[in-house]
Image 1 (cartoon, rainbow over the protein chains, first blue to last red):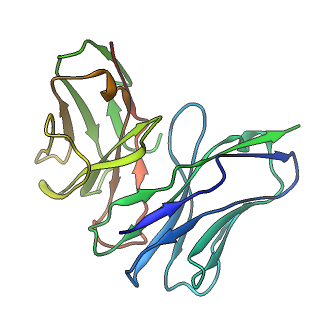
Image 2 (cartoon, one colour):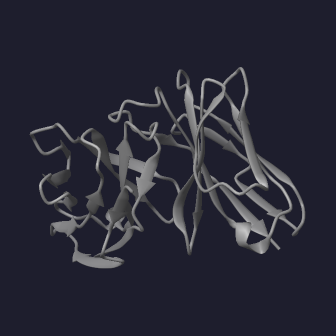
Length: 115
Length: 115
């Protein structure tokens, strides 16, 4: 069964430094998508970045990049130059074609950015 | 504003009662997904509708039901409410249900408190 694992319940990072949030996944499907979402304390889910299983390049969106290692089944999120506003919960998620499009989420990592 | 509208934002009700949560998807999106986010279970997929038809079911209790109307808005009905049903309920929409690179757009959620 498909599964997303985020092993870091909480992380701290100094403002302006880079931080990596870990995500590993398990799937038997060849075609899938990987997503990262940010959930600030206000509760909304904000889409950050997407990586397709057939994409050869790592995805980047501004200060966010996804370190995709397919053989290791990992999809780590890298946030460069952390800002205080980056303090939030971060969720890794996977979407499989054969499952009709639902997202499976990890348990999340709470990131705290220190000034 | 994400384009996905959920109402109400907050709901407080007593055990045993029934409530209806409403979701209007982003314009043009045919798929609607419902998720439950609780402290102990994380983000759990409940059910998906695509263009009015149920497409996938997740860990949805028999006390819960949903439907998608011809105008594509969706309602999630929760009945015989228990304390454990207290959670943040998200609706999300996407243009299609099977393309993995279509990310979801989440609504801001309905926070349900059962007392």
